[in-house]
Amino acid sequence: MSKRITIIQGHPDAQARHFGHALADEYAKGCEDGGHEVRRVEVARLEFPLLRTKVEFEQGVPPDSIKQVQDAIKWSDHLVILYPLWLGSMPAMLKAFLEQVFRPGVAFEYQASGTMAKKLFTGKSARIVVTMGMPALVYRWLFFAHSLKSLQRNILGFCGIRPARATLIGQVEGMTEQQRASWLDAMRKLGHAGQ
Image 1 (cartoon, rainbow, N blue to C red):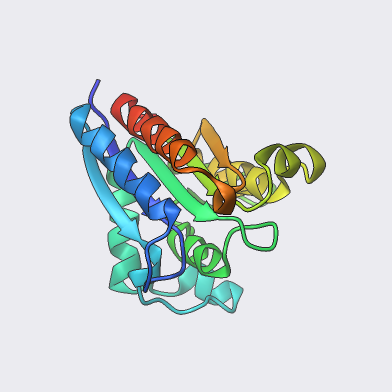
Image 2 (cartoon, rainbow, N blue to C red):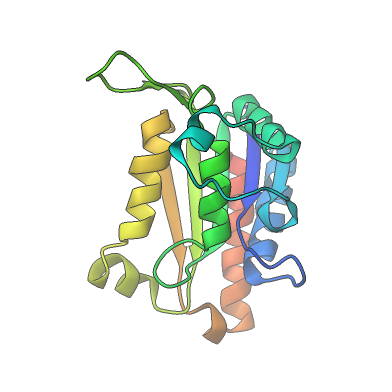
């Protein structure tokens, strides 16, 4: 079954290409080969301010670049979010981007006092792809993947995006060309399957 997929490249470096960019490219190729519709977002190429107050978050008007991303997510059946692990979490630019995009009235809706917010992205799924210097098992088992779980549960899950599966790619700097090719092939297959 064909899906509508938005790929969000969360690397904050707009000047250079990184392994995460190649992973996103292969995922997109797989999507196209599988008959899926694809939209792409490069967070590093967007201009948006940091949100500094609750009033800005709840009542501020997002810039057009953010509105376009919100529309792409509303359009999507499936999101793919790629980013490098920096200091144990996502880069600050990606977090600021998510705060802009996942606003009340777009991603969730406040309800009467004391009740949970209404999830406005119910029915969507996600794939989170995290690259890192450490072995992925160390991040998952020694550090408990706290930041990843927060993204899965506290941002995506809070808005109704489930399941939010993860692909952790460790020891990126020390990979052989064969290992890199294997990961690129895996991304292409996930894209083809719309997963």
